[in-house]
Image 1 (tube, rainbow, N blue to C red):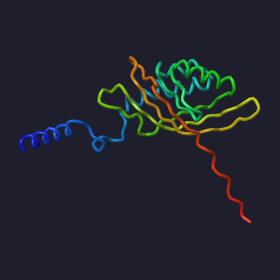
Image 2 (image 1 turned 180 degrees about the vertical axis):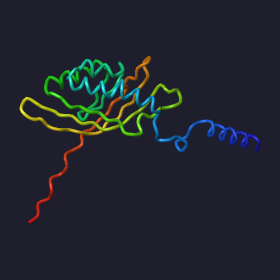
Image 3 (image 1 turned 90 degrees about the vertical axis):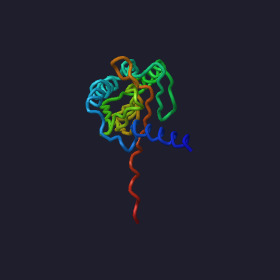
Length: 169
């Protein structure tokens, strides 16, 4: 009986000591949010708009995973090659990545990992088509690399265009 009581008390003490979902707010740390906006989002948009594969890949860790609508790409070198191939086939412009109002979110208690989500939009022009406006949503996991935040995983989708209105007879 005493053992069960001690275990119950220990569990209760741990639950009060550790943050829980209900105790956390949806408000991100404003300093951390501004740090990511200045260091990552704006510069990532710039690299994408310049169609600079090396600059885009530099935002990723060496072991990063990029999950696209066509499959996964593993490692910074492969991610750079992926973007280089895309930038040869298409011209991207007006890339804007906008984090949602609640991003970023700290993972765990160490403060060295974050996740963030948001929306993106861009203009795509091919050799025989375009320009086409595309948009979608993204999510990323970041890890601290010295004073910088690097993307360990990025996943995104493309929002399909709205269905045409139904014909009436």
